[in-house]
Image (cartoon, rainbow, N blue to C red):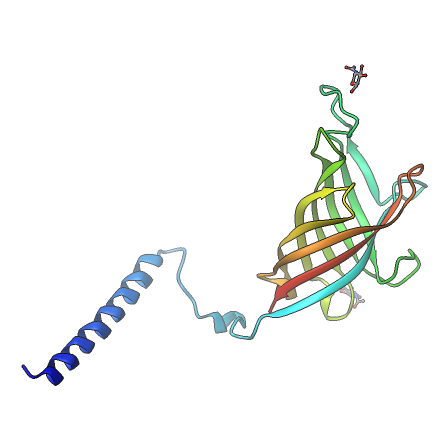
Length: 196
Ligand SMILES: *[C@@H]1O[C@H](CO)[C@@H](O)[C@H](O)[C@H]1NC(C)=O
Ligand SMILES: *[C@@H]1O[C@H](CO)[C@@H](O)[C@H](O)[C@H]1NC(C)=O
């Protein structure tokens, strides 16, 4: 066999081997309830976008219309000054500016729970549900650790819905002001998300 022929045969084998592997994989991934699909069908062939959202999150604990309500008291089993075990359910306004009267663009719905016995630290579990423009009805899901003493607290964006399907990213929270007596707070959220 000439070396030219040998090369041709070699490439032929290489290519058929590759096709064989990918078709075998597809077969293995296909069951009655699952099959691989073309990403174009979900519009995922577009380039992923990176967006920065700047919002103000209002934790209103006091007054007649609180948006943040303690639903589980701190545990009496541990001697903790960090409210360990406390769970608060929230439906907090998200506004464009730091004033509560500024434009409402969505709500932060979910709960936060005191998860540290040593410091004031919360587990945040919330959806940013937007009501503005094309984002109306879409959500960003944030789940992370929020240690109040840190100036900037970073929490992962673990997903989203609507325009934020397949979203990933991170949120940075910085306290804008806090009224220690009433318990109310306004927190600036800077959220960076990849989405389609
Ligand atoms: C809780 O801990 C503090 C010091 O951290 C202590 O002074 C206090 O007696 C403790 N209380 C109880 C009920 O154990
Ligand atoms: C957002 O969507 C809801 C339900 O589809 C609709 O009732 C509401 O008017 C919309 N809001 C804005 C600001 O477009």
